[in-house]
Image (cartoon, rainbow, N blue to C red; front, side, top):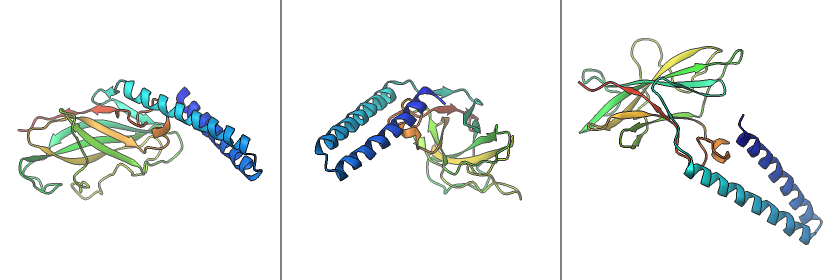
Length: 212
């Protein structure tokens, strides 16, 4: 837990405290106290929002090397590789002119000791070398008889598995990396957090196999 996490928790408690006092002042018809607590809360929230936005705009983007693991508590993800889908394979996405499907392999792992967990709000985007982003163009159906894994599958302690995500890019575009997110709240309100408002998302670079 970072100092900014603690600041967010303290700010949330302070806001609840002020709201309770505003409610009490309103019920007791104490207009002077009502105005005072309302101005205090409004000023604090405005100052917090200003610091949040300035930090997001001025912070450098975090970029991870290919194969470097990133964790949210005990739930971790690694961008492994991206390969162009073979033209002989059954396509994971609908065919489109001047488009190529890339299959991005992501490894999901757990560093927990005893708890089984899952990330129901996990999502991924692929970013190309020009900075354009793409969402998966389909749910990968997988190959073989075993069911394919998804980002939100449960993980037992110490377990890991791979997920294949298909992305459809222009034929001239090449993958640069993946942007993986584990929900947006409360991170969107935490100063300096990767998912805070207007903050550039962390890029996990991925090794891309050149198309043949």
